[in-house]
Length: 581
Image 1: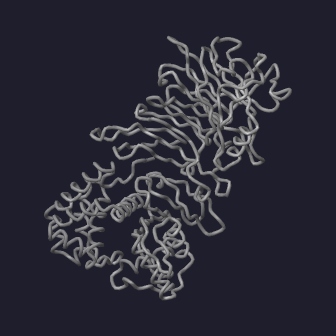
Image 2: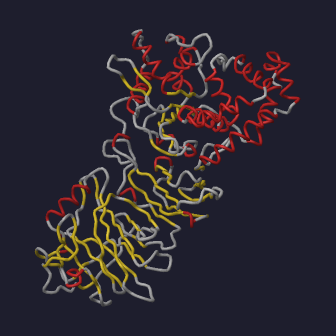
Image 3: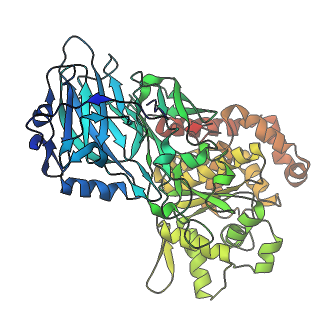
């Protein structure tokens, strides 16, 4: 939708017939609309020209229902669906609102109406069938909303109005398919529909949607929907230009819908252009993503995560975080997996270091270390935890009457709020559904990508049983000496210190280390690690074996696992993202 910032000027004569206060055949909210001219009575325009307008007024009940939605966090919009009756040619349609000042007495329009925003659409060949839906968002500001008293439609050819409805606010387009009409949705400023379906203009969306973290925020997101495709076709990539960035959206057979929250962009209210594979795109609509729980209450951080693809997290503007210390996300492909992105290692440590030692560190497992220990130790540069380990940690703290720090108490609230852990009647905690992973802005760019991939694979492993079965098969087939090298590496490197007796942990780390890098770099990665001085001192015989075999066991394992994940989810070794920027 190309939305014009300035108001579209419309000056026309209004022809009012004797039926100006009769009922229309068109109904809305259980009542018939008020017909202000003959065309509105039948909801049909048969003759183009001066009389090619249909004017409708709203009843009091209809206005009240409109006002209720217009003043809500969602915002409100009104949509008309028109049916083109012109055969063998194109028509142009326009749609706009009528306001109180347009009436000189109840249900009597003034003879001349002046400028106002319109949604205008030419029915060229790209449109699907004879129908088109036009949507216009209602104006609102801090003092309230401007409620229409009616509306009008105009066409250069014959048409009839099939439907009129109240909708939540949205801006953009939907191509429609089968019996569904194409939709062109505009903000309060109106606009001309781009019937090539290549652009969506959100530059006026700030009049509809709020971005800041307060109770009136509706946290909008661009919802991109692609046409479903045959699973035998390789993933198509849709390339988009938006907010000064190039965004690539990979389309696996498992996913058709993608969410791009505006908070993820430095210039959120911009024009979106589809640069490649536009035929794959079904709709692009900016709308409210979730509810007011996204806003930050009077506490130290948000409870409800922002749903998106991990590929948008890398360059997410830190100034758009809802709190200073971190931002919280939900993985769109795996909704039970939560991401933390922390401002630095120190903040991340305050949330997860005690938990890391309790869950994974050899010699400390099951132990709640002291605050002094947490302040002096660095757990990991990134973290991952499944639901039952999180439940065990908080249950242990409750049973031992152990005082957790403020960050850990906030983490507990987040986990409870999102159902990852559940509080039992006796005050203990049990596993709910999901997992938590984290990275930090203090890691360098290339490290962040590797760590995010590594931790993301853990998130999938925690939450998908079939994937765990495939990993077990690859683990069982892995070369014995290469496995011994890997376990010794994890056990002896001081920043890792994994407990090699924990088979679940070993399989989990095996999978994540295998899949964290692209297939093409796996051999080089493990051969280079085998040459490290610290590794040579700790396990020279095994390290030399990996070097001599050119890490072939690792290559075989990554090919097996990566082929499976690509077929099932469209993600592959070294890349867990479907959206990249």
